[in-house]
Image (cartoon, rainbow, N blue to C red; front, side):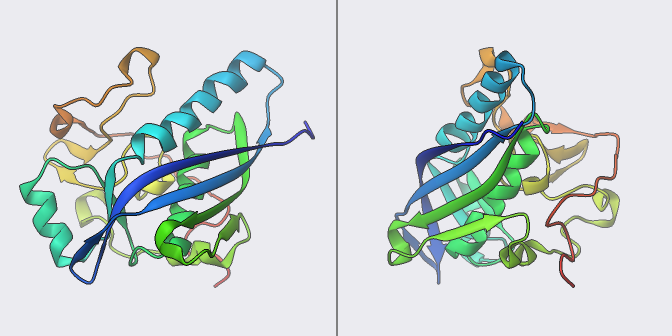
Length: 211
């Protein structure tokens, strides 16, 4: 299928920078290509994409994983977080959004490119596609402990997690469900952990890209 279409959306997230909290709003435009001719399937996965940006990413706190304030807030609040492997520059946010969007779509539709700018970003917008150098910003080592080292980081998985947490029974898999009847936040999200069968995958723009 050669047809493509664009979709624009926004979401708000507070960012942690130098031990301070700053309000931020992200403007996102996606170039999308369907890979199935089944209109019902296209519609279902587009709804999943909308849910990702309008519910899962929205009203969160975004931080670099090693930020001391993030570690405090994560332990003492019920906020939802977006956990980044680098400080929360727009290039990094654009890259995780691009990867997570494609991860959740199951190959039914494909995000060819994603352009992102933000209120805090001085009017600069960043465009990411599968060949973008920015994807190397997501290269991580030892993201999980030895026990869970075979798992992908959250931005490469099809669940609704936007940060990673190891639990006794597995890794955290998100506050939301992709099922239509479960679009609200589950207040018992601390129980959302699951051990998945490990299925290695090769993804465009994956770890050690262009190295």
